[in-house]
Image (spheres, rainbow, N blue to C red):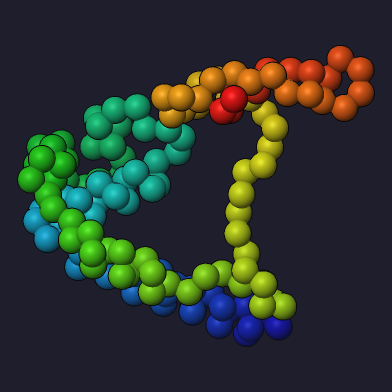
Amino acid sequence: MSLLHDAVRVESLTVLSRFRTDFYDCLTARPDALFELTDAVLCTDGPVRSLVELALAPEHRRGHGSLYGGLNQGRIDVGRLRRALAGLRLPKAADGRLVLAVDVSPWLRPDAATVQDRSFCHTYGRGEAKHQMMPGWP
């Protein structure tokens, strides 16, 4: 049983390593700076509020000047990145069904970024006094 789990881990790391190589190849200008910046964004705990936080992340081993240089002068071959993403296999359960993660929680998120025409809409709930205002489109 543990050999199976080890094989899955090795295969997962192989897929991840291949994608990281493909992603790096998509970076056509300032690739090292952009690659480390991407690692810093993905590995930082919580939301990133400033570029300085990214420059101080352990994954970003370069100076803050490299961070700004990567953002200002770096380039990504979007078509190549699209092909790399499309080439990834979709995660599947043991029975072959796709495994997708979706946030369906009903919690209000007043600080969440929204689109321009979204507003609060009256919703009709079940039971007594369950009517409430929820963000959405009228």
